[in-house]
Image (cartoon, rainbow over all chains, first blue to last red):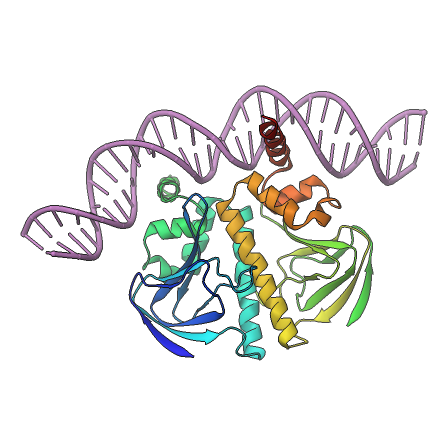
Length: 158
Length: 158
DNA sequence: AGTATGCATTAATCTATGTTAAGAAATGAG
DNA sequence: CTCATTTCTTAACATAGATTAATGCATACT
């Protein structure tokens, strides 16, 4: 259980690294992403203060995700499975609920609906990351996000 | 801990129901889905023998998912959180890994890539459900699946 | 057997989002 | 402060997948 200080841009974990660690964000903001075969980055999650970020991949002990600091941050590093209790079960359940919801959004909602949902759900993150990262999290390009946002504003005015 | 016998088409849980239960599939095949505001069904998961199916939603005690039998099935009903041990943690981790992978596929892979991945990962399910259900799981329409499959075959011949 | 229902396929057309490119605005580094 | 880099926006064009509709098959129902 170590405490790590990270500078903006520091990469905490890379694809292929061991993924036996779990990181609790004590301060700052991290994000986890993949880079696909075409070299494109896709943001899997943001991790602000209080969140746990870890890659639990299907391939044992091999991370699929990169984890990187968006801001200077402090994280507490723990071994995975180092605590088994009511509280940790609740955290697992909550994580599953979040992931389930994300899948449902990706399958059933349009880009602008996903964006609206995101800014309602994570208003504090919206302020702190570039739009292109939000676009990536939503599964669209920055250009598309720019477009649907301005189309939305115009429609509201009408 | 009850054992339930289900007939094909039986709905085990509906949107809005309590979601305090967890179902272990002992025999048969179930699926979980949402119905969106436009009335469209989106399949969230299939649950063959040995799998656990449950809705862990963000809204406490309120299911977002429908759970229904695709085949005559037998499930064991348990209370959520009724066991906390190494084994259950592993199951939670595995579920999270599956969901993470699904999100990554939805964000980074084309329809045909998602289809190829699906038939490799769940060959036993492919045989037992209509194509339209696979399309729904992949996040596309049955027509689109039909199209990309035949386009794929033609490309392979070339 | 005959009819109804659900499923798969194909095709024409439409639309949301991707791609490429350029310029403007904001941010950061020396 | 200035230059370089990153970010955002807009626009023209391209494409994957959606929509609608028609047809052919199965399967199930009477």
